[in-house]
Length: 475
Image (cartoon, rainbow, N blue to C red; front, side):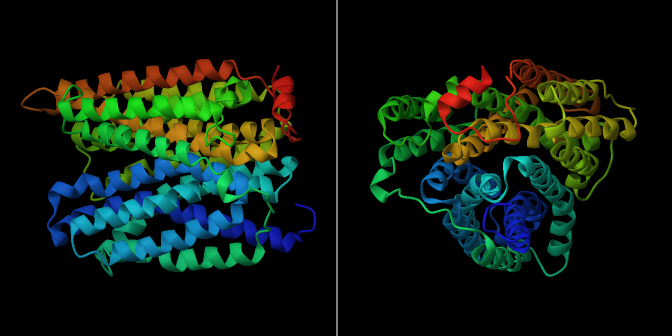
C-alpha cells in the first residue's frame, strides 16, 4: 500500500483500474459476436474486417507512446482520458449509421483503448509496493482472461436482446463507474515534465512506421505477400521505423529507450511476449475452425469454444501472482509454463477428422495453463527490474510486443491456411492444413521457451532505483 493511502482508498482505486481494464478487454470479444448482425443492418460486408483492423491498428500504435507519456506526466490523467475517451467513442460506435462511420469510430475507440492498455498494469507500481505487486498482477491477468470468457456470451445476449448497438452502449455505465473510482481514489503522482519534453518527432515516425506495417499485415488475408499493395506498405513502414531508430538514439526523452534492450530483464520478457503471442493468437483464431470445420461441432458463437482455455488462464494467472514471489528459480517456472503451452499446440497437430472434441478441449486447457503463468510473470519481472520512472515504458512494451507478435503470427498462419488448403476444400484437407499451421505456431512459440532460459532473475520484492542498478542486479 502506498504511503499516505488508506486501505479503502487503495481497494477502490484498484477496483476502478480493474474495471477500466475489463472495459477495454471486453470490447475485443463482445464486438466480434455482433458483427454478422451489424453487417446485415448497415450493408457493408466489404468493411467487415476493417471494423476489427481499425481498432487493432490505432490501439497497438498508441500503446508505447501512452506508456512513455504516463511515465513523464503521471498515469492518473492518462487513465481518465483513456476511460472518458473510450466511453465517448463507444457511444459514437453505437450511433453509427454506416459501416464507414463505424470503422472510423472504432479507430477512435482504439486510440483510447491503447491508452488504457498501456496504463492499467503500469499503475500497479503507483499503488502497490513490490511485495504486493506480484499478487495484483495475477489478479489483473485473471481479469483480462475473464473478459474472454464473459465477452462472447454477453455479446450474444445483447445482440439478440436489445440489439447490436448495446454491444457498444454497455461500455458507458462501466466506464462511468471506472472514471468515478479512479478520479476520486487513485493518487496522482506529480511530475516536473513539460509538453516540450515530449518526443514529437519520434512519436510521428513511430506512427508513420507502425500504421502501414499493421495495415499491410492485415491485408495479407486477401492480398499476396508479394502484391504491390502489401510490399509498398512494408517498404514505407521499414523506412519510417529505420528513421525512428536513429531519431530515438539522439532524443532526450525517447518514446522507446533502445538502450533498455541491452537489459536482460527488459529484452527477454519482450521476446517472450512476442513469440508467445504467435502461439496464443494461433489458438484463439484457428481453434474454432478446427472445432467446426474438422470435427463438425456446430456453435452459434464460436468464441464460447475457447472458454476452457480462458478459464485455465484465469486460474493459473491468479495462482502465479500469489506464489511467484515466494518461489526461488522463478525463471524455470516461466520456461516450464511456456513449454506446456508449446506442448498444447503440438497436441493440436494430432487432431484429425473423427477425433473427439474432448481432445481439443484438453489441448486448449493445456495452452491456457501455460499462458496464464507467463502473463503476470513477465509483467512482474519487468516492474521489479526497472526503475519506477520507466515502469510505463516497460509494461507498455510488453503489451506492444505481444500484440505485434499476435498480428504477425495471424498474418503468417492465415497465409498458410489460404495457400495450403486444397481446392475444393474438404474436412480432411482442412485437417492437414491446420496440422501444418499448428506445427509452425508451436515452433515459433518454442523460441519463447529458449528465450526464457536466458532470463536473469532479479529480486521481486524490491524496486530497482536506476538502470545501472538494474544491469548489476541482472548480471
